[in-house]
Image (cartoon, rainbow, N blue to C red; front, side):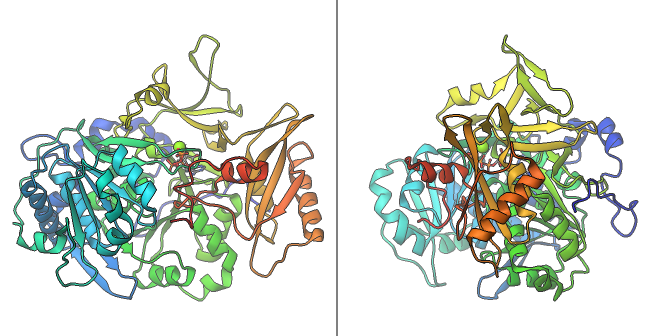
Length: 586
Ligand code: ATP
Ligand code: MG
């Protein structure tokens, strides 16, 4: 059975939680104080990379390890804050030398290699706008993003260039320079490109960080494309205030932590929490070049003595698939806090954290558009499994609906509505590139409307219902797919479930579930009937699925989200739409 509440022990030990009393933290919080905790540029202004790297490099943390890079082949390389300052300054000088000034768009298309991190930080120092693309994208998604983002410079690897970019150059007249990280240490000599390493080595390590202001654009992120064509969200240097403070409050970062965010920087989580937040907080951040592999991950957690770990439901479900015994073969004495984002975290997964690691998994919620964590389960706060937690101090979040006059009204506790945030937090996106109309539509009456449906209980905990686009309407009920999926994943045979509404002449829609099974279980008619009955018992006949199909695996975005729109399109024989972010395509 799933407990309603997991209470927490009073704060003790070496690392008392940063946020000890939620109500007091909310009452005391101000964004001005959060801004004052950063140093700002010496002559005024605010720059993300300066806060992340240079201010630490100028002080007592200069020799502290900032990034510990773990290569796929077992190589391990440490970069101190001073190393990162010098390398990123060199890259900023390279950009200057190429005539790239403030506002230039510098894209990176690469796996998780050290040069990616150097490029991002150097770009920010130079006043340019950084955009990281997922390396598994095929040529067309790369072309679309470079074009929408009006890329001036691209940093990529020799092999990615040859395979995916060389053939696009003619169609990208604006792209002025391509810098290649060679596959070998030898110089690269590929036509129409420059050698990244050679240029970095020749550049000066002295660079005065461009005097950017909090409102200057810094980052461009494409959304995951879960619900449709990916959108390019623009973020500003002022976002660093949120990156920094959420690292402390929601991820409970302490100066001596070893932090591991498993997300790829091609997605916003890998940028905000794989690069910026840990560095502004001066901790050691692990970067693993390899892809998901449960055994490898357990080894990293153990060997690197990871203390705070930020991962995603899809990874948790894959680990669950492999069973608890595999985890228990290792010990993780340093591990103190586990958090997850990106998709609903089924209550079963929260508990599995306790079973496997001795720690519950703390769900939190945010989006590309919000730039940073907005709703979270905090280290010292009781968890209600299945809830995303409570709003970040300083963030006004509410479940709302629009009145007939187009005003925003806050729902009563328990009532379902759209999750909204009062506009104005520092990491709020400032536009969708090339789509001003869509951006304006997100804001009504001073609120940002997230497109997600939720409800808030009497204690202020927020419960995810579903994306507005995914919610199922059946016989007058509104059914959130998450609730149905969570009930199915309580069954011991089920690894993952995706639920859609299937058009029905009588009920408008009926609930249909797609299920992937855990190792050791095979699809059968008997199991299908068992699952239908199991769900009906838990959910009642009105909400339970009427149909269940078995799939070897569910379709996911590359950032790990179940693509329900694809399940639906395939079920109904409709066009699949934009599949550029679908995992397993190139
Ligand atoms: P697109 O906007 O292109 O359809 P996307 O919304 O998946 O893609 P992201 O910005 O990467 O792109 O994801 C944010 C969304 O992920 C949220 O709006 C929400 O639907 C979902 N999400 C994130 N965290 C959680 C969570 N903890 N629980 C439930 N859903 C979550
Ligand atoms: Mg979205």
